[in-house]
Image 1 (cartoon, rainbow, N blue to C red):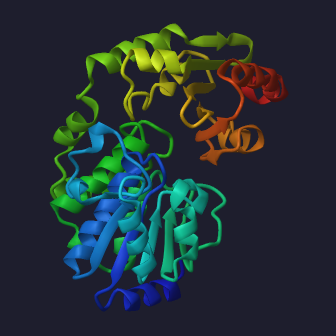
Image 2 (cartoon, rainbow, N blue to C red):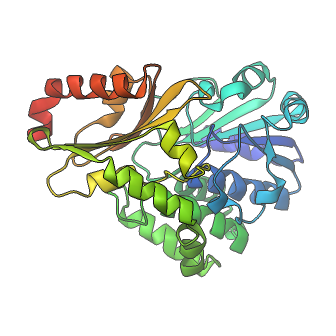
Length: 338
């Protein structure tokens, strides 16, 4: 984002505006944290701001300050579409292509509002007038922090904004253990704690609220874990029947793929989750070092994301998807063995 862009955005925000803030479909901690942080900032500046999420999000995020004000598009479609149509300014956060918003894609594409994209995923589309894209930054929440710095308004970060930003940085870095966690990230987090983010309470609110069913489902996932040692790869599968048996709710499989990656010697891990209602298999991919799962997902499973963390989908059956995945791996034998 250029200095000229920042000057323009400062001008746009100099008077009260009707603003809509949008995360991606199936929003995670970074998506909810970044949108709510920006929401609190804009409300404090006198704007009429609304967060509109494409669909619902995990229970472990339903405590974040301002969360109760989020409008769910698939529930309140008419109201949400009206707000999008009337918006003067639309921020799209934590995604870089409008199709990532599902049914919101068309109303967003048709909206006359000036659009601002803030995101850290690779290869952003050019639908927005102003684009702040940086794949080297660990989370969109950290980018929102830097965005407020660019606006010369970091002093406006209060405890609510700090809490929202801390959630996204913590979740997208795997509690600060992923390679994307830099010295700058730690400096940002330190400042957020100084500004009122209570780190221990935030961690507990996100990670210490497991249900019995969720832990039972984790047991099933680990029992289904398979390893291909000659290719340093592990994968997990969960069928719709297994999800139903343990009363699956959104967010119950969050982070499960990382168990495969935690195995000694494993460089590439995947999880395949059957979603009968959508007629697809949802795929999460994780890797270590320089094995590029963003490229892998784009090439084979209609997805993408980051070098070490990406997602995809398959229209094949669960067993056919796994067979396809395993059959592809030998093409990457050299990279997986390095």
